[in-house]
Amino acid sequence: MDSEEKSVAVRGDSGQTNVNTTPWRKGSSRPAKGLFRRTPVRISRNLNTGFKSPLLSPGTPRSSRVDQVSLREDIEELKGRREELSTQIALLEAEGYSVEELDQHIDQLHEYNDIKDVGQMLLGRLATIRGVTTKDLYGEFGLELED
Image (tube, rainbow, N blue to C red; front, top):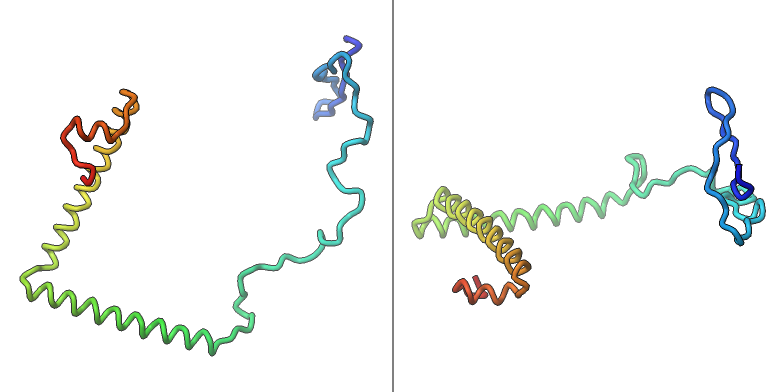
């Protein structure tokens, strides 16, 4: 074994074996034994304390009056919102729209947006290949920037 190589004893199930490790560079000094420690010398008392959850447990006393008041306010707000939406639906139905027709329009808008996203990705890749901006390609293909 080279004089610059150090040997480390590794103990496995089958017994003790020597494993050669990376040799030290010539001219470099070896760190003093015990110079680098990973664990503190003293043991912290905080290691033996219990975990305190940030969530309240079911047995924890809460200000139930405040929770009930805020819940009632939220319920009233949601009831008001439901009435507002019902009024808007009634107005649309009075104008001749049907819920099925609106669902169909929404589905078509989703499909349009998916196709537009694919087109944007293709334009971006083509712009990267050509080394130009996407804005330059819009003019080339007759597209408006607002599209």
